Image (cartoon, rainbow, N blue to C red):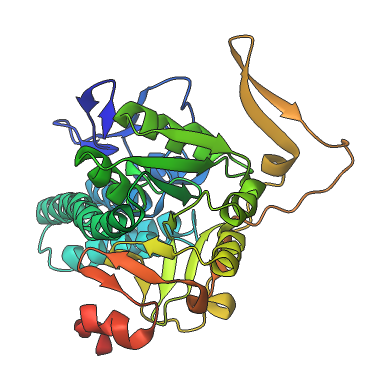
Length: 365
């Protein structure tokens, strides 16, 4: 990820075995690195959304498990690590990558014959998870690039892409999922323009996606969440591409609240709708996403208040009567029938079980 001309990952291990992350609570107004020193620090970073996005949630959980290994007692570390996994998993229930990452580190830890070996195995597994996440997103970019190239060639001009929430490098270790093809196209000289949904209630599109795209030099325009249908009706969107926090074996996709409405508008207007995800986001145990995917409900005050910069200072402003109650569903599920394709590190497939298994035959077992 480019930040003022310098490359950053969103998370990395320091020589003293602490973990550094980009503090996303402060963006876009301040770029600051936060240091996580314990499992509890990682859990709090996940809970507060200092880090956010499917891939980064997984990588943070993996490093949290490594820090838990460093905190483990000389005896009884197996239960200690299981407790760490439970604590981390409880922070963000919708994101499949979190449980996937803690399970991987637990499996590695099970091979340890001593506490020192436990620490080394957990460190290696966490680093492997982070490196693989970045590589998967790079590959997603190349596969998604082909979709943008085809539209560009057919249209003979600029490709207008609508995305929702942040599925960029900030949501992963590097490159992003939905943004990876956009960056790849821009870097190849293909003219692209991104419509950036503000993404209420936490404004991840406005604060994160717009910041990312600006740092990379990608032309973009911020719009309110409800503008997508209008843009599609008037031929101003050539492609919708979003990320996902959990995708079922049959292709249903959970993503930030409001994604389902974008998919409905895309289908009504004949605009292709794609979901970009690494394989770690698949939940092979689920078939019906609407019924089976747990939907996180967050603090209602995220809906009742809006945060921003006022006269050079951060401010939080109440936008409704003080007595008004609010509900804050973090995600919705887009049924597979509304998705034209899934862009993964192994290629593009239809959002249906048979074609997903064509790319991931090992999931048949």
